[in-house]
Image (cartoon, rainbow, N blue to C red; front, side):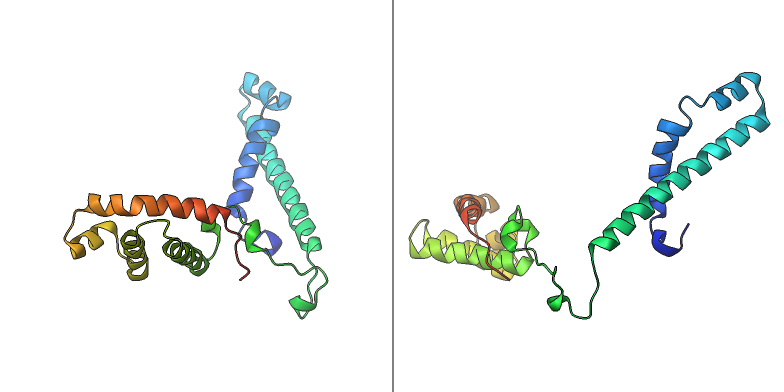
Length: 177
């Protein structure tokens, strides 16, 4: 192991081999059971070696087949844009906001905050507070210290904004990057 297509897959091969060894190659191995009953150490050792080798080989072959299937799925060419099967994941196919790039997340949040200000959905001072926190990268404690209020007061002021953002962004269609 450690070369060719399986390079870097050693941990996966070990884990899968152990599972296969326990579930298939050792469980019910009649020759191993017989050797164990006779206390034949040489045969026990031989059966364990054969079982381990078989499990590693089976796992390696399975992983190689999987890698080959994956390689066949993709055809390589000079320019990916000219490739007939070139695709790009549309941001709307992501299931959560957190799967988007950080910059896109911020754009969505600031857009929702600006819309809330324009439509007067929430108190502007609370919305401005959240915008300041995000732009400066400040925590609730840091913003509380700078304003001379308690962290709980900051938390209460931004709680409605946080709930609004969750609902608003859930309804948003993610923009193309």
